[in-house]
Image (cartoon, rainbow, N blue to C red):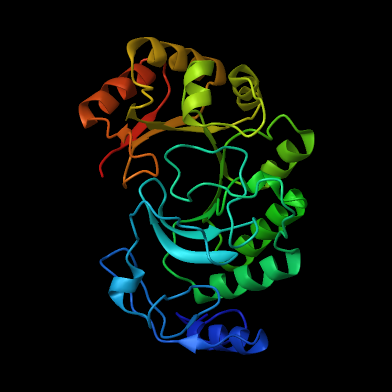
Length: 315
């Protein structure tokens, strides 16, 4: 097969144009920013890869602010990720509002205003259409990350959605990892655990070692024991742990808190721990950036348990 041709004998760009025409999407010119993109096409679907102001490089820069950064579409990006490289974002949650089981004090999505209000989740047909067009565009992505506007495991057809996503990935961009970022609150549900078998990595949030700090930092909507979350994560094979380190109004870097957190890491036995510090001004301005040396010291203690650990620091 000639380079740049797909299985149907069309060039990559022609395939994108054809798919866009079939789904009523409008092509727009675009260009990559910095060196994050390794390849670029002349056409990109506005509905799937939105450019906020005509495709300028400035408009495509990731915005780090204390304002809400809700995903505007079911599929969005490419998005530069400190942990996963250049990613395609998959939002299985309602558009226009945060829908999560936590109210994390550092969350870039802002506060959730209507947790109990009715929500409309993306249907499978919409997901299939938008993911197909995005993958046909073949941006230089490293992973497909399921996250979006809150807790992705709340989707009522989670297994069907993740199976669909895996099938489309295999057909169009084999070898790219599918990652689900989760608060872990739904991992006790058998249907959620079955659904997560369709992805390559599940990264569970574990921001605290004690119940008190957990309640102050992650602020679950419903009463939740940190012990329950820990045990649910421990039952998930090949799980990764993601932990943000903060100081200020809440501090999860004290000696006692870190010791309690390490005990949970020992119980979960994750394949990897990712420690990260604030990379933007948090909604809660009383939170403070943790120095890199502190994060590295905690990472060394994780590695002493025989668990690989990465540190992502900076504001």
